Image (cartoon, rainbow over all chains, first blue to last red; front, side, top):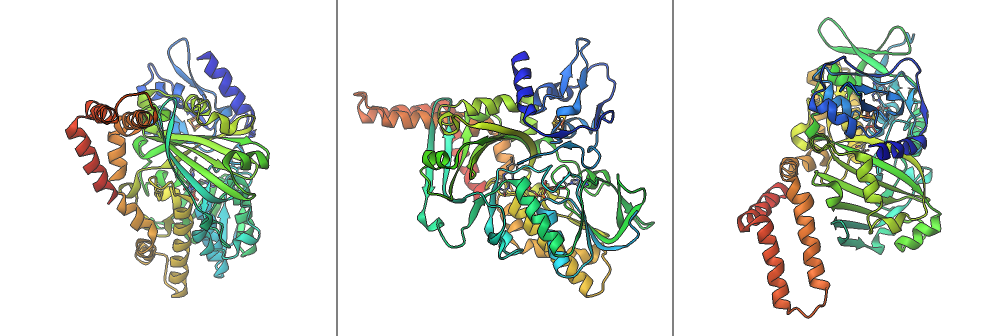
Length: 97
Length: 435
Ligand SMILES: Cc1cc2nc3c(=O)[nH]c(=O)nc-3n(C[C@H](O)[C@H](O)[C@H](O)COP(=O)(O)OP(=O)(O)OC[C@H]3O[C@@H](n4cnc5c(N)ncnc54)[C@H](O)[C@@H]3O)c2cc1C
Ligand code: SF4
């Protein structure tokens, strides 16, 4: 896990972002136990924004998010996450895409 | 607050939105295009192969100034196991023609160019503006949009939803369902920079020529997926995509399988010494014909990836996006020129016209393909590639075994892995899905 985590940071470091501080565009709703899809996001999110806490809950820090929408497809319908685009101009800014 | 009322509002400045906005503006319509990115392309990811024919139908002389990377003279289809690849390569000097058929492009640059053309055609383009909601009248007709920028509403006769695969607006307005995990692939991609001549040497290319590789096999770890490597002028786009449902059930990490692809002995030498300058992720619609939603309604049409118009078998998306954008725009122009209102009934013309084009015909042809590949991903993406590699190696390696015994061993391996009946049924089902 830690090896993968350090590598993802190197990857995201190459990208350009304009983070809208204090206004995260994705939120995880409070939960007792994550569903299998929410738990899967700790692996499947390509920016590794989702982490499992020591208390067994899934948290998100969306700063490195590439707005791919994978977590929305997996977890919005169940209500476990709230997903929106960042405000216009904010978020990931692909130089090449 | 924008007071004026537009003939049309286009949401999104990707391939489909630019095609639609350009076509309507050049026919004299008063068009407003809204894009949430800082500049057009800043949110968009593609391989990217661009198909000239579909852009020619919109901007015939695009070759004069469009940012094109390389024209393609060679395509390789690889079936990979962990240490090898078996391939079909097709290269032809016929592709060195005056007006080449396919080019690699870099979307951020291409979209900026396309957007400039849209402005030159007379449309108003506003970036850094996220459309947050559709505005409807009391009869539920879409009459405009709300954005995160202006407090108020912006009104138009028709809204063209060119909002890409996630399609937040349309799904939230219940015009269509949210894409299902099994009908979208998550692709990750890196840009590897190398000097132009190094790329040309490694792929045996002359200046300006390009080569692309599409690969299936154990690289996707039994998930339904595909890897790709495309040559740009001074960079190589390398990526892999698999179904979201497979990622979730296998708990695989996309960047881990991308890194594994990079270190595959067949890929590693091609990108050796490169400098990586970007890592991107994006969804691709993979549901095919059966996933196409309602395409039009009172005051709106939907085009491109938002309408799931993507041919996963042939890796075509941008051309379906451009064509659906252009056709929707032509339908709108026709309805307007007859001074008819933009009702559901009148906008049905878009679907009628789209059905006559390659877009719907191609998707219909492969309508059973997604289900087949998705339910048999273990066989198609791992078992067969492994068998193929073993068979090829068995055929090539000279070790004193009589050829007849070698052939028997290969046949036995196929039967052992899939059984006689399994082999026959895979072939039959594949043939039916393809026909
Ligand atoms: C890794 C990868 C490789 C691919 N390779 C190929 C290939 O080689 N060849 C090919 O033909 N196709 C390929 N495709 C598919 C192709 O990229 C898409 O089919 C194409 O980009 C779809 O165009 P579009 O206009 O429908 O959507 P997009 O290009 O995604 O554009 C949607 C636009 O809408 C904007 N937007 C969305 N919502 C809002 C909102 N609410 N307010 C304002 N703006 C909004 C977005 O910022 C974006 O600019 C590939 C896709 C991926 C992910
Ligand atoms: S949108 Fe994509 S990158 Fe962003 S948090 Fe969700 S899965 Fe991760």
